[in-house]
Length: 115
Image (cartoon, rainbow, N blue to C red; front, side, top):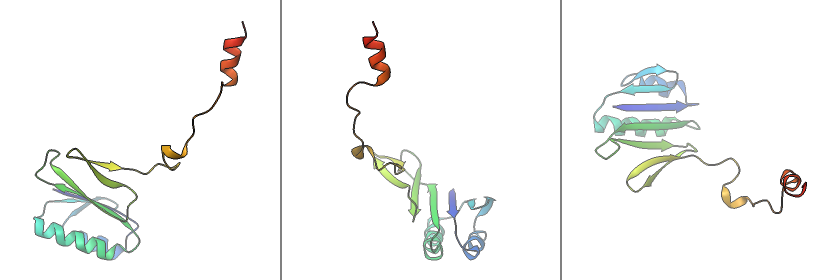
């Protein structure tokens, strides 16, 4: 089984994919194809997607029974102990850029010292 999700891609690519897969929603394609056809479809997607984004999920022989491919997408597949997860970048630059607040908050001071 193959699932392809496309964002901001040319109509030509969408037409090419409808030869092999069913479009169940705008930009979402589902179907069954051999490994050779899947690899050629992915090469075509990467070639024609221009500035668009693409994610392909397909059946594989692993514990999750699926595999991911990503092209020009801000989410990336990451392998953690044999399990593939999708890492989404944080909006604030990650935890490294944050600092813990110092001192007491105004509410904590009122609660603590109001007695």
